Length: 489
Ligand code: BG6
Image 1 (cartoon, rainbow, N blue to C red):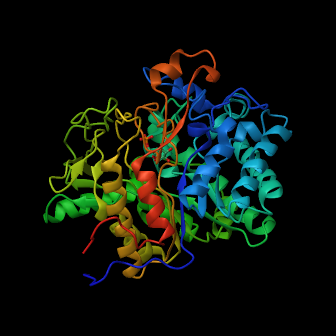
Image 2 (spheres, rainbow, N blue to C red):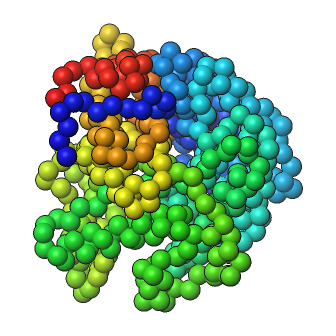
Image 3 (tube, rainbow, N blue to C red):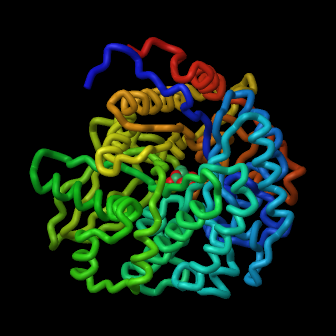
């Protein structure tokens, strides 16, 4: 649909940005925090820095919140570190961890910024893995339930928007990259057990949030990547639908309907997979009615028909930020991916596709009719300071402008969208490329080399430098989506 005027955003629309504890905090051995599996995983991503320091938000959260307020934020989405809150298997609550998050939440509220809190963003404590068996064990459900209750009890008086697990679909689809597969010997089968355990954790979070948080709302955080068919060959369309199912729809259907779809049950039967699903599990899943869907949307995929006798090809992610290194996957008999000639690509071979945002919101709205909030969207880029000491990130401004415009168009199309929180506020640690892959509106004045080689964070500048995108975004959000900085129509 074509609209004559620029899209309008609702009056109470929440504008902010997003982060995750392990990617921004640092201070991994401070305040009683014990190691998380992702700490170990991030050490495998050399030559990039691990998460020991990240953006040093643990020590500088007040400065960061002041910058958010200056920018005009009305929301901030962040996650809680499980092992900072519950550092050991005895389940005792770490008062220093609670204090850190209480202080952060209070600081946000003092600045009229609504906290949107993710309970779990990839950082399973080492004790959960070593002593309980990690995601492969049902004991982890009890430990996670305890974590949820502690969080709702301690923060639920001020935090009303809760997110359960970040990108469960990506944790299963990219289990090796994100470390979910630790300890598995037959990942292709075991991942469905892990997925079921995660579904039960999600369900516990939803049920307890509704029981314990007055006025509390909670939703899942799918990583949503729309899938286009390569051509109008019907085989390509079915391949796109298969990919849609196997990378996201089976998760979203389960969250919304509280049951496994016919598609996934048939898939399991065909692939001789038999997850341990008990009648009481299904009852719990049915009880867990979500209030909204939090959407992480960065890019799109393009699929074509994959013959059953073709050769399997794994996804080969671009690890170095030099274009053209992505290796597309082929899942014989299901789908194969390829590049899309109609879109541009980032240095890491991610599609720059603003209409994917509009597509995603419309797709999710059409299927589920639930309010949505954007909890991630952004450009991962190689960036450095210019000679004037500033960061002129024109590419990020262009990226965000086009993406946000499409959020607006989706709203005009009739979708209910309540918030936009791009990834990320400051530069932070990426999942596999340290701080080299920068996403922030605010530049952190350090490099992977410095982070790797320093003995203590006090040796580093870690100065916050507002990028051009900070000033651009500030004007846009202070005008509630009217000041685009250029003619849009
Ligand atoms: C999202 C994750 O999928 O993508 C974030 O929730 C992640 O944790 C972001 O950082 C960007 O991905 P990457 O690999 O560039 O860090």
